[in-house]
Image (cartoon, rainbow, N blue to C red; front, side):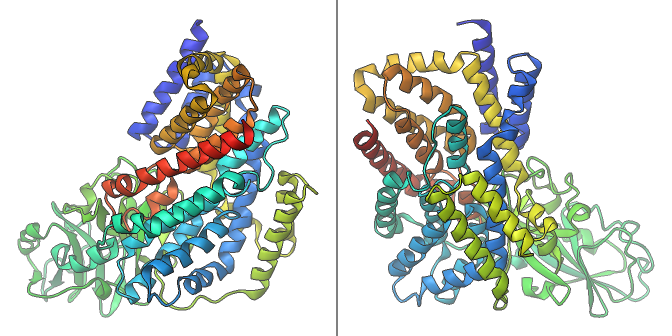
Length: 590
């Protein structure tokens, strides 16, 4: 083992530790690892940039646009509402939801689907007095199930496909993974409506927790006549830096200002709405000219009107807000929205809002202008769960064009008339020419942070291979598992990929395991397709933690889940997927 191998393994281990400890955004961590390998001379500039021209990565970018066109058509929400049915039998409704959602996620990006469907499912459950915690985690799992059915189901499949093409292999066909994934999905759905349904908690959602505890964190003060505060700005009045309270709204003669800028002037009779520690309300009582309203029952709905609305936002893995307090992130000025409350691990955080250090999966209750959803619906900092207020108007022409384009793209690739990349290029070109999607709109649909993770991970995977680190790891791997035969090697590859997926990201896990698995297959003289299928399934089958897969994180707060809920429900499902995958892979490819 030479120095270069030791250095590459050390860089990869450091990267994994940083990802596990969430010291920064995943795309930044992987970029730093790639830059280190480039500057040290392990990778040439051409090799370091290979990921940015990888066919799989570029196909993922194009499919973001296609999925965005389907999403903006508005037809998917209506489809899910219809699939859920009347709700007379919750388990029956669960099957009716999971089957079509799995089918849709086989062809569309999982993350926007779960963002769209979470408010729909939650409202459906609320109307029927069913706990949404019985349905939201199965919603996430259903998209994971379906994502493994096809080549385009997840970005992971396309990344592995792109690697295979670069090695001169044929890559995955459109439905090749379905040989393993459909039987696994059927068993997974059966598990979720039987044992899994019993294991799922019957718990309040973040929305219900925010509503029921509003009197614990909302308070109101009125500006009295002759008050010395009249004519002063919020900053000058000392209302910007209170110890335990945070000003979120000013109601003046019926008009509302939310969020409240520091330069806003105070007028007689203004109603000032605060959020934070109710025990520190004495701060307000000590300010001359303010009358603190006591004994009132201020509700969340009282904060809203035609211009201001409440929105829930789930902090993402890629968020620039992670490890910063609300105050440090300058949330109010950056997003033009005020944080009313923060929900984490099945409870509202009882602290001054500005001092709460944010983590991935935190659910923020925001008071913002009505256009906030439009401006930040594609933000990488959080997933916005828009409220379901009125029936969505469907643009029939755009809906038909988007759906027909998707079907044609799938058909061209499935029947091998065009490679997947060219079929995706043609689909996006069609959407542009028919004005179904504008060029500006397309930019909002593309998740650039995901593309950077994929591109950087490909470069790191290449470093593992060219340095000899992958071959070194594979040699020891084969030596350790030789007593268990080929099936033992497949089992351990699945286990390691699944483990990495749960603690880092699915794409990074797949890219790291690809070169190692290729060398293992060569040493064992078996078809490497067996290991590539195993990696594709294992990298997506993330059920045991909220951090392994974006969709699990999205439903974490809104479903009122705890970390232990994922372990309790997800570990048996992980084991089922492992057994089914290894068994079918062994029968078909080995």
